[in-house]
Image (cartoon, rainbow, N blue to C red; front, side, top):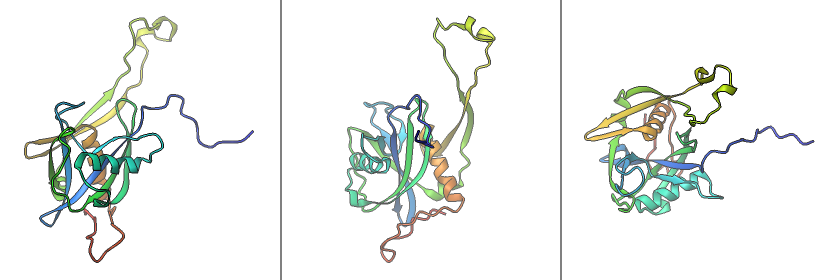
Length: 212
């Protein structure tokens, strides 16, 4: 019998999604770009990074770049230094992959069908912030006909809860929270720990992506 060291997931999560954390220079300073979602789409009005579902046969990194092209109306060659950052599981069980990438020659364009507006925040400003932090948890909700009589303790069974830390970042009138803030916080902690984001090529013309 052949042996496979990778366990098979019993209940696969929803289709995975990818986002890109876009870095760009604004007046000689590194900034992160955020989108505000069009009010007419799901989670309208929320602040987010460019991103969306990973299509069948597509790598998560390619999905992050494709979605950024579609939402910000940029060409693929304008997105450089794409580097893996963090992977989290959303409340709906969907795996969400995050990448950082540098936008070059960006002219504040975006698809109005998906994006209401964009704004940028200096990385140094975000690193200086201590985000508001709230401890939350997910609970199991059971149907009315659940057979409590068949389990030890019945309705008093000590169900486990899943902890989640919620962050809020503030910049001008913008409130960055939810999964976007969670991925942002992880990215900033990566940079704080000394992680560099280097373009790797054309060093004579392309600045380092370091955010320390």
